[in-house]
Structures are given as C-alpha cells and as structure tokens.
Image (cartoon, rainbow, N blue to C red):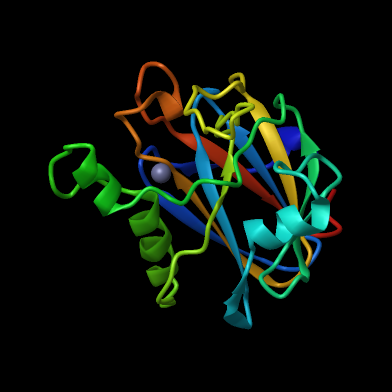
Length: 207
Ligand SMILES: [Zn+2]
C-alpha cells in the first residue's frame, strides 16, 4: 500500500487513541503541525502487565533516546516495538512521566484539565481494558535537553510539520498515543496550543 492511499486517522488535540496491532504491523505517526508531543505506550496484548519500558530500553540501548533502527523493550526486556523510520531531527524524550491531574493542579490550572495519564486510561477503557498503573511513556517529539550539570530543560519540539515516525510492532500489542494537553509550558511549541496529530496503521505484508 503506498503512503498516498493509507487512511490517516486523527489523534485529536488533548485526547488519546488506542491502536491494537499484530506483530510486524507498522504505525506511521505524523506530527501534522510539527509541534505536538505524543506520549506513546505499548502493552503486550495478552498480558497488560508487560509494557514498553523506557528504563529497560535505555538499559538495552545504552542511550537516552532511541533512533531509527532501534528496538524498544518491554518491562520483561522483550522487543515490543521498533523505530523503522524517523524523518524528524530525532529529538524525543524517555525521561519524563506522563502529565497528570496533579501536575496541572501544581501549575494552577482549573480542575478537570485533560492529561496524558487520563488519556491513556480512557483509551484503554474504550476497549474494556484497565490497568492500575501508568508506565513511563516514550514522549515522541518532546524536547527535554539534559545539560552538563544533569538538569532537564523543557523546550519546544524541534520537529517540523509533517515529520513522521514509523513504528513496527514486535509482538501482538496494544499501542496508545496521547496528544499531550500541556498548554502551560512550551513543551507543545511556543504557542502553548495542543494540536491534532495523525497516524496510519499499515498491516504486516501490506507495504
Ligand atoms: Zn502530557
């Protein structure tokens, strides 16, 4: 299937989507406006207790940030996703937790501000699934530079409109994307405005 004929599905600004995948399926993730961070999770479809783990991935890769060609590992050190292609500058974050209600309370936002943590659990609930925890996400396009003193900055994404990351499932998995609702810090761009992003599911053998 050529990229021109693939159906693009919306990841609505401030909301999440769930994408069940089979091994070798690919997901093309498009940063439509260039500035939107996408918190990304993956779970073993047969056992949600096994999930994509940034600490295991950093340990296996000996890198802070995975690159095109890298495998992403589960909490049991099994390959769960891999990055096949990345047309962005490759700036993604593996260090920060998902935003949640407590963070927005600390920032002085009104109650009910949407969060990536809520988006994850809402997306899983749409399939009748529930987990009692929130794994650390792969924060696609999130720009969190680490300086020489080990301090973390929160900067605008370096990606451009249309930049894309192609992920491949390495097991039967449930993938969740959250278009981060953060509108206080510049993590979703200096306009502090969450935007839609898009994805396509490319079934295995359908290239
Ligand atoms: Zn978020």
